[in-house]
Image 1: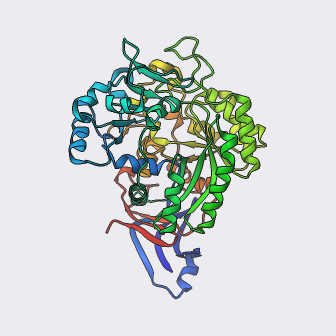
Image 2: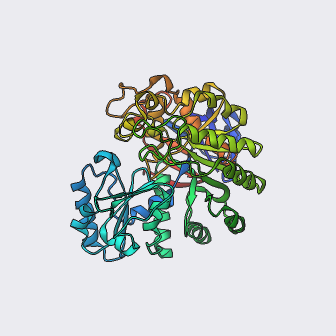
Image 3: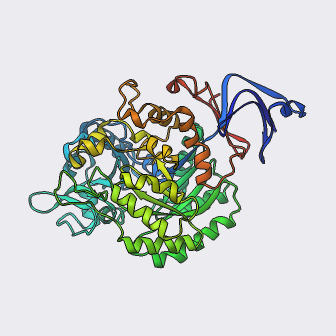
Length: 511
């Protein structure tokens, strides 16, 4: 058992003392001092519920960390330098698979295979774009995938081509991307576990105790099962099975079996209770589904992944199998379609619409009416290069009506926060700053759409209590974070993570 006294804030209430063990909170305030336990003084530090991430892809992030890491690169030349150094230093794996390059550094996101060819030789190189709905491949990768000579037709997404119709290097959305990714050899079990361990340590270092891994792709469930078997998990993780329109009926039995396998591990930190749908694409590639045509392509409304009727049928099926519903929806038509499917299924508890970038006025009240959680990635609610790169698709008016956190809260909806990591940083401190400022750290007084700012208390709630509800976790579990200062009263960007406690055990300490 551990006990603290000082500046404590739990589930929206202030306290002066807390005692907890692995089972959860044992005592609060005066009753703590009646226990036979040493009470540690927090001093100038601050204790609160640990942060939780309601939508992320930690294993994807860990996999990318094994390859060339180009996230901080600010030019094609920098990317070339990083990729060239990685290829020279790593003989295995044969394929260099990394990320995540900033799509906005090149006009239109038109990256060319020949730029990677210049530094990769005959090694296949694949880099994921920062939106993770786009990838950039070199000629060797396209040759091994059998798509170098001609671009196959795809029904959803697109392939950039040169003047002769040959793929030039960029593949957008799942169907196009899989032309490349299906050719990449699977990682070894040891590499999968190395990737997962790195990701979990990273989350713990940021004060995060629980995460929704929002997309189980090939080999991922098996990696988590092996990590649970070896007792190598650090943070609570709920897995979401990826539901695809072309195969959901056949996949249903597999998801049920894998849910049972996860349950049978009896690991306190691992569950698999959710299914994930993609309603549409993203704005960066103009594949998100919108109610009014894109400014950049008159008459074009984006690429819905599902027909409305098929999405309704699939959501209803998995809700009946007692899976939580979690739907990626970016455009306002995509959001409406997701809400329609959830309503058709009887509004199953804790259903989530993730990202909710553009929501039409008429759909704002539906979140509260249907009890749907709006999961936001707060780091996206700022005027950076990624946002600016979408202006020509949507126009200024629609851009400035995105990420309506304030409107949804005022309409009575529940919102939760996530990161979509590795799409953006999983750092909750930076997320709280962005949600409360709608600005870049270097220009905190230049707020974009300031009318949608929320309070520090609301932001902290969205990263803690709201996600615990989303993940069906009791808020009094023994997951806490000790911060260097009080985020409700101190400059948020000056605060550091001192200790992260998960299940009553310290999983990160800055000491």
